[in-house]
Image 1 (cartoon, rainbow, N blue to C red):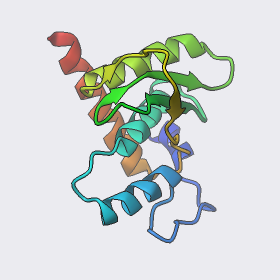
Image 2: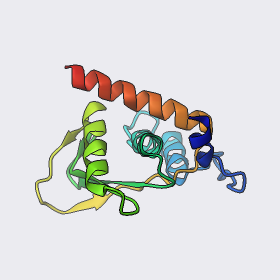
Image 3: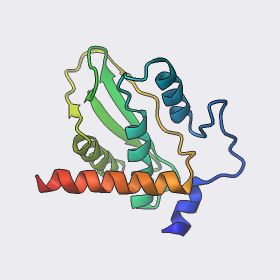
Image 4: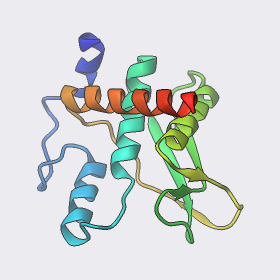
Length: 145
Protein backbone atom coordinates (compact mmCIF):
# COMPACT_ATOMS: atom_id res chain seq x y z
CA UNK A 1 0.00 0.00 0.00
CA UNK A 2 2.85 2.40 0.73
CA UNK A 3 4.12 2.05 -2.84
CA UNK A 4 0.72 2.94 -4.27
CA UNK A 5 0.33 5.88 -1.93
CA UNK A 6 3.66 7.29 -3.07
CA UNK A 7 1.86 8.74 -6.08
CA UNK A 8 0.19 11.28 -3.81
CA UNK A 9 3.34 13.06 -2.76
CA UNK A 10 4.87 15.22 -5.43
CA UNK A 11 7.93 17.02 -4.15
CA UNK A 12 7.57 19.65 -6.86
CA UNK A 13 4.12 20.72 -5.67
CA UNK A 14 4.41 23.82 -3.58
CA UNK A 15 1.91 24.57 -0.83
CA UNK A 16 -0.42 27.51 -1.45
CA UNK A 17 -0.37 30.68 0.61
CA UNK A 18 -2.65 28.92 3.13
CA UNK A 19 -0.26 25.95 3.46
CA UNK A 20 -2.48 23.52 1.55
CA UNK A 21 -1.19 21.65 -1.50
CA UNK A 22 -4.66 20.86 -2.90
CA UNK A 23 -6.62 23.77 -4.36
CA UNK A 24 -9.83 22.45 -2.77
CA UNK A 25 -8.18 22.35 0.65
CA UNK A 26 -6.98 25.93 0.14
CA UNK A 27 -10.59 26.93 -0.63
CA UNK A 28 -11.70 25.10 2.52
CA UNK A 29 -9.18 26.97 4.66
CA UNK A 30 -10.30 30.32 3.20
CA UNK A 31 -13.98 29.47 3.82
CA UNK A 32 -13.29 28.39 7.41
CA UNK A 33 -11.35 31.59 8.12
CA UNK A 34 -14.42 33.66 7.21
CA UNK A 35 -17.30 31.27 8.05
CA UNK A 36 -16.03 28.73 10.61
CA UNK A 37 -19.51 27.35 11.36
CA UNK A 38 -20.63 27.00 7.74
CA UNK A 39 -20.82 23.46 6.32
CA UNK A 40 -18.50 22.71 3.43
CA UNK A 41 -18.03 19.52 1.51
CA UNK A 42 -14.42 20.11 0.49
CA UNK A 43 -12.96 17.45 2.81
CA UNK A 44 -15.55 14.90 1.70
CA UNK A 45 -14.75 15.45 -1.98
CA UNK A 46 -11.01 15.11 -1.32
CA UNK A 47 -11.48 12.00 0.80
CA UNK A 48 -13.70 10.25 -1.76
CA UNK A 49 -11.22 11.16 -4.51
CA UNK A 50 -8.25 9.77 -2.57
CA UNK A 51 -10.24 6.66 -1.62
CA UNK A 52 -11.06 5.90 -5.27
CA UNK A 53 -7.46 6.44 -6.33
CA UNK A 54 -6.14 4.05 -3.70
CA UNK A 55 -8.89 1.47 -4.03
CA UNK A 56 -8.50 1.16 -7.80
CA UNK A 57 -4.79 1.92 -8.20
CA UNK A 58 -5.43 5.00 -10.33
CA UNK A 59 -3.00 7.83 -10.96
CA UNK A 60 -5.64 10.52 -11.09
CA UNK A 61 -9.40 10.86 -10.89
CA UNK A 62 -11.79 13.79 -10.74
CA UNK A 63 -14.94 13.53 -8.66
CA UNK A 64 -17.48 16.07 -9.88
CA UNK A 65 -20.27 16.93 -7.44
CA UNK A 66 -23.25 18.79 -8.86
CA UNK A 67 -25.58 20.88 -6.72
CA UNK A 68 -28.79 22.69 -7.47
CA UNK A 69 -28.70 26.35 -6.53
CA UNK A 70 -31.32 25.69 -3.86
CA UNK A 71 -29.46 22.82 -2.20
CA UNK A 72 -27.63 23.39 1.07
CA UNK A 73 -25.64 21.31 3.55
CA UNK A 74 -25.45 17.66 2.61
CA UNK A 75 -27.84 17.91 -0.33
CA UNK A 76 -26.37 17.31 -3.78
CA UNK A 77 -27.78 16.70 -7.25
CA UNK A 78 -25.32 14.06 -8.39
CA UNK A 79 -21.80 12.66 -8.52
CA UNK A 80 -19.77 11.84 -11.63
CA UNK A 81 -16.28 10.36 -11.74
CA UNK A 82 -14.05 11.29 -14.64
CA UNK A 83 -10.86 9.39 -15.35
CA UNK A 84 -9.18 7.51 -18.14
CA UNK A 85 -11.52 4.95 -19.74
CA UNK A 86 -11.19 2.48 -16.85
CA UNK A 87 -14.81 1.71 -15.90
CA UNK A 88 -16.00 5.27 -15.17
CA UNK A 89 -19.60 4.07 -14.59
CA UNK A 90 -18.48 1.69 -11.84
CA UNK A 91 -16.35 4.40 -10.24
CA UNK A 92 -19.27 6.84 -10.36
CA UNK A 93 -21.48 4.25 -8.66
CA UNK A 94 -18.89 3.75 -5.91
CA UNK A 95 -18.50 7.51 -5.38
CA UNK A 96 -22.30 7.81 -5.21
CA UNK A 97 -22.41 5.16 -2.46
CA UNK A 98 -19.55 6.86 -0.60
CA UNK A 99 -21.42 10.17 -0.49
CA UNK A 100 -24.57 8.39 0.72
CA UNK A 101 -22.45 6.72 3.40
CA UNK A 102 -21.21 10.16 4.48
CA UNK A 103 -24.80 11.26 5.04
CA UNK A 104 -25.56 13.08 1.79
CA UNK A 105 -28.94 13.15 0.11
CA UNK A 106 -28.64 12.85 -3.66
CA UNK A 107 -31.58 14.15 -5.65
CA UNK A 108 -31.41 15.50 -9.19
CA UNK A 109 -34.56 17.49 -9.92
CA UNK A 110 -33.20 18.49 -13.36
CA UNK A 111 -33.21 22.14 -12.29
CA UNK A 112 -30.19 24.36 -12.96
CA UNK A 113 -27.11 23.19 -11.14
CA UNK A 114 -23.43 23.93 -10.79
CA UNK A 115 -20.39 21.76 -10.34
CA UNK A 116 -18.48 21.98 -7.09
CA UNK A 117 -14.70 22.39 -7.36
CA UNK A 118 -12.88 19.03 -7.60
CA UNK A 119 -9.87 17.75 -5.68
CA UNK A 120 -6.63 17.97 -7.62
CA UNK A 121 -5.06 15.08 -5.66
CA UNK A 122 -2.07 16.94 -4.22
CA UNK A 123 -2.10 15.34 -0.81
CA UNK A 124 0.45 13.75 1.47
CA UNK A 125 0.64 10.01 2.13
CA UNK A 126 -0.75 10.62 5.60
CA UNK A 127 -3.77 12.47 4.21
CA UNK A 128 -4.38 9.70 1.67
CA UNK A 129 -4.24 6.95 4.30
CA UNK A 130 -6.56 8.90 6.61
CA UNK A 131 -9.02 9.54 3.76
CA UNK A 132 -9.02 5.89 2.69
CA UNK A 133 -9.72 4.69 6.24
CA UNK A 134 -12.44 7.31 6.77
CA UNK A 135 -14.36 6.41 3.60
CA UNK A 136 -13.92 2.64 4.01
CA UNK A 137 -15.31 2.87 7.56
CA UNK A 138 -18.24 5.05 6.46
CA UNK A 139 -19.15 2.69 3.61
CA UNK A 140 -18.84 -0.35 5.88
CA UNK A 141 -21.17 1.23 8.48
CA UNK A 142 -23.63 2.35 5.79
CA UNK A 143 -23.82 -1.14 4.26
CA UNK A 144 -24.44 -2.76 7.65
CA UNK A 145 -27.50 -0.59 8.36
